[in-house]
Amino acid sequence: MTHAHAALTTVRTEVAKVVVGQDAAVSALLVALISGGHVLLEGVPGVAKTLLVRSLAGALDLDFKRVQFTPDLMPGDLTGSMVIEGSGHELTFREGPVFTNLLLADEINRTPPKTQSALLEAMEEGQVSADGVTRPLPVPFLVAATQNPVEYEGTYPLPEAQLDRFLLKVTLPVPPRDQEIEIVTRHAGGFDPHDLAATGLQAVANTADLLAAREEVRQVRVSPDVAGYIVDIARATRSAPSIELGVSPRAATALLRTSRAWAWLTGRDFVTPDDVKALASATLLHRLRLRSDAELDGADLGSVFATALASAEVPR
View 1 (cartoon, helix red, strand yellow):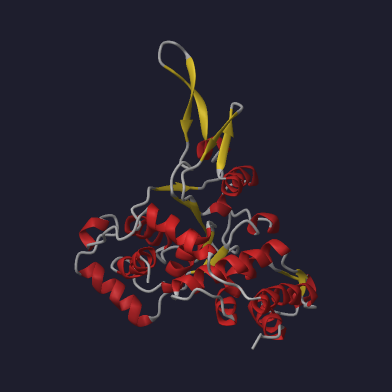
View 2: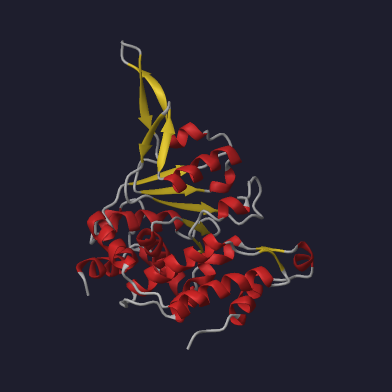
């Protein structure tokens, strides 16, 4: 076990000091950080989406910023803008909140498409252009965008092309009864979600560990059979009768990246079909769209995808 692997494995334990449950979301955020991607977090208000990302930033000693997306948020409010400073009336660039390591884009579907696009461009390019000058964003740079379920009023659903920019989508469920009792008990004992230091949360890894992890993940072997399995899963979504929009080749490469990172996190230097299966839903499901007639018939996207996944032959 390398130093980077030991450090990043400890991060999960550290985050658990603050956040009860939600292990899948913690793992997904780690996979995305190691893979250099971004995460879409979905869940009703109050399931610790914000607390989770803040805790992760603390455990990884990363800079963290949060932006509350609103209907009147402008692109410049995110990326930064040119401002006049001092008596010399010189134009200088004032950095926006995207200049950070971990950006929590809270309720991204409450802001109009123009502002959503500005964020997604920064995510894709890893840089911001203003006044003819291109400014690189810090490394690592991860956007954890939260969205309320689309049934909530006043939302602008993200189009499929923009959803495709997110490496993973994780749904944070309402915790089961025993975990909810633990949450209430912690609060009864004086737990303050705004005071992470009081919880004993410590930085157990840093940027150097993350960059070392990325280098190690590139060495994780992918056999031709496993690569073929990834492609077969992607092709199965395109031929499923209930799915209007199957996944693109970019989605197949995304599944390769997440499977590699997961294999590394679990302590292996090669990818197995089980790694691919474990990450398939979180990596691909948000990129799919059901046919309207299938929706009217009450089809469930998760079940349709599970059928497509099962139809791909698993390498022996």
